[in-house]
Amino acid sequence: MRAPRRVVITGASSGIGAALAQLYAARGATVALIARRRDRLENVAATLPLPAAVYALDVRDGAALAHAASDFIARHGPPDVVIASAGVSVGTLTERAEDLAAFQEVIDTNVTGMANTFQPFVSAMRGRGGGTLAGIASVAGIRGLPGASAYSASKAAAIAYLESLRVELRASGVKVITICPGFVATPMTAGNPYRMPFLMTADEAAQKIAAIIGRGRPFAVIPWQMALAARMLKLMPRRLYDILSANAPRKPRRG
Image (cartoon, rainbow, N blue to C red):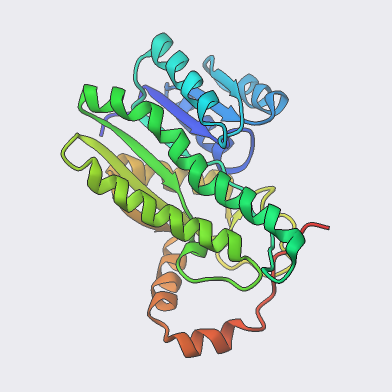
């Protein structure tokens, strides 16, 4: 795959999204930065070697994403790569009624937000006969994590959604790629009160993600050590998984 010239990235104000923006801009791509906070987006844009298109919006707002996509395509043409990296994570407990709002936010952002991101670009990419839609899922979508029901459910749904989309677009020339990172040092994981094995920096994750996209792999877990762990988790009998996971440390809930 040739180096992409036009790349759209959600969640671009920090973490993996910002690192991907840096990487692709350094390779000469025109990058669209999408996230909620304009000031942080502009800070990222100011560090890039090339001018970037900045769209401050919430990925839960499908109309806003459609408008941004129309503007980007009109100015620069259909993107070569669209990366849905926006995501939120917070501890949730179903028994706590006050957590239901957080549950809804996680599902809406991590699943519906991904569909909102891709939808307005599909026709233009299909019409051109090529391009890549890459969704950032998570190892947390492989098995349900205690105390992170919303996050695990959202990432499992993202994995299934991306597989469905890949099959739908199989004959179109548009590739769909699912990427499941393990732990990445970002603001999202900064408050985790437990050990995070095989922790990557955002820059390391971005390098691996870009390599996967460049090779057109349909599904990948990163890093390779976490890929092995994920395979073992998937094969583990439910009874054993339940016993081993019951007392696992949990992501903090919102106060």
